[in-house]
Image 1 (cartoon, rainbow, N blue to C red):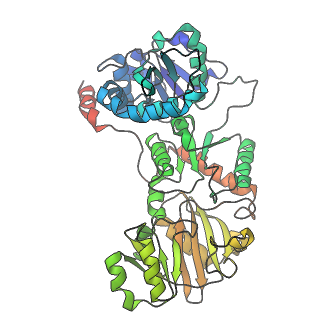
Image 2: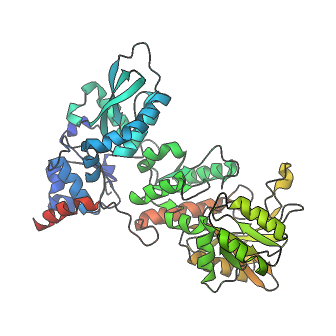
Length: 518
């Protein structure tokens, strides 16, 4: 069995591995430097490499281990650029105001706390619960396995005095057990003995927002995903925006929070891609789908039928007034769940509504109104249809969501879920063609079926999958297909949408060149 984690250390006796030790390989720094030793370990691209060398200074053995990891395309912490960042005091100091704000918000000093004290950070974790947010942010910034964080009591409260990497050789003996506990958690799975439950095939992080009013998946769907995962020997865990620092503990990421570009959901996807972790939604899909301007442009260039759409700014909004045929639909580019979408029935309404919407966006879309009693939603996964639903318009409303209706039952219309083969072939084919313009991930295509043809309304990168709605026909099988897709991405070696996501720091190119020359 190929090692899932490679640990480079000159203090091997500190690391205690129980149970399935064949999942972990411990190497001395000089062995990792040796190409023959590494060749004997087989393919390491999908393994995590933890550099625990005692010295990260420039041109030290620890420095060269991380530099070689980068040159070899291995996923390694800390990276060379993070070593440089932490040693470059100006960069460290620039992060201090943010870190002090986190310290002030969460740190709860006790009567026994001295005026100045030092805390140890292990892979973004700390023994004190009130310092966990600070520990995670420190790890996200500097990616150091071990950090020493000194704080002191100043005139305006507790502040950070110094942040330094800590060598494993300098770790007190009484902290070895703590270190091994947090190392185990960071690796994504506790080392378990063969007598216990079998090692999961992979660990899937599901990013959610417990406070979101209309999340892409409700609790029932999330519970079903976890349940099916257990049956398939896949660990599914829910995480939130506060868990960025723990992302590398997982083998894949599934975003079940409404996505946006200027948002932590995009940052999670970007971080996953940097670390070579399969992610749904990927950044390309988020960029292409969440902004309706991009979507309108790419659909306009295709052979697919869409409502006539005009992209306007304030000047063009006035210029096209004489050409409008009311009613028209006005959209903010990055709206979701029918928010930021209004109908103008006459010129006065058009002027009023565009004026208000321009306060939030410099660009708007004006679209022909295509009335229908329902919208088709075709779910597509990896280029194949996943589910087919009809969403009916909310009672007395022109959309499937009526956010102005205070009665919850009247906020949305009804739905019907169909086997894919029972959905109109022209609708399914149009949905697949639209998704081919975006990528190979998970999408939901909204379409209108009319006598004059099939209209593509929207491609969603984060489609709703609610219990008893989108999964009503397939049931557990829908979640099996989702999890199998993640397994496929992991097995094939994640390359996103055609781009290999391996961190490459251009600042160290000259160092790589020197090694290659040697």
